[in-house]
Length: 302
Ligand SMILES: Nc1ncnc2c1ncn2[C@@H]1O[C@H](COP(=O)(O)OP(=O)(O)OP(=O)(O)O)[C@@H](O)[C@H]1O
Ligand SMILES: [Mg+2]
Image 1: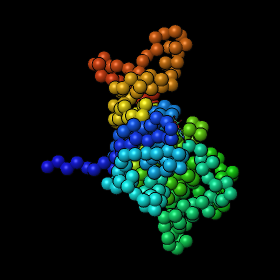
Image 2: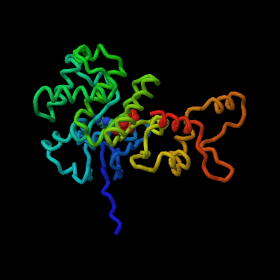
Image 3: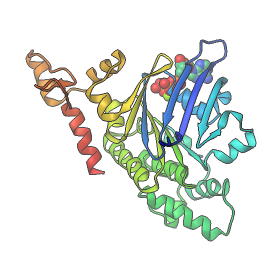
Image 4: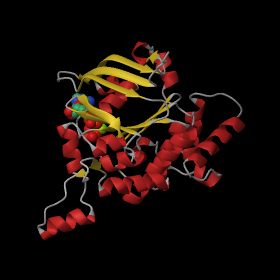
């Protein structure tokens, strides 16, 4: 008898905002335990709407969602606000785009981390300090007093994003939702943060819903990719499959629009035919593009 594993997260949602057509229309998405799933879609396609709907926070933005969201077998749509408060930050962590504005400027980093710990844990201050130190170490930040006394204004954007990630993983959530977590960062810091997500996934087993419109960064860390287009998931599959043989015209357009590699840029400058993506090998099978090879190299380095 074949026993199919229950999906870790399974949702089917219709969601939108007052007096507007729904942004998500019966949108279906499933995640596996411990995977990094990339959610890609152009600006305005509904990625953040889906993230907020999963956390049942859409109403705070004047939105509304209907349907089902099963996380580890529990229907979040049927939960009461009290149960949801116990879930947010404990079973589901959230990391947003603008780290400096997500931190409270009036409170020290240490105070904010302690508040995040107390929201879901009780016990002696020694336990709190140990959990905070472990979370900071997990994101490669110092855990000493001088750092804990700093305020957001005394951090670089990259450090602030690491603090927010430490806060989000403090209680070792089963699911981390990262909504464009690197878009405010320079490319080197972006690569470091991407590496950090890959390591957290590997070492803590945290499943990550990684939201972005940057296909290359998604490809560098995600096991699978889902493409959101016009309110629907039009394609979902392994990163290799999506990059090597995209089926939907929108996915094909996305891959065709990837930044030029040096050889493509030179061909374009010289007026030579620019190789299309994905490049077809002689046997007719899709061959990984140079950019994709780069992302595999990145993933290996983590
Ligand atoms: N509070 C709101 N009230 C009304 N409409 C909204 C609200 N928030 C978002 N929208 C609309 O819902 C649609 C989806 O927005 P959403 O923020 O989910 O897109 P997104 O895919 O996250 O875009 P981006 O990549 O720019 O972050 C957009 O058309 C947007 O204008
Ligand atoms: Mg968004």
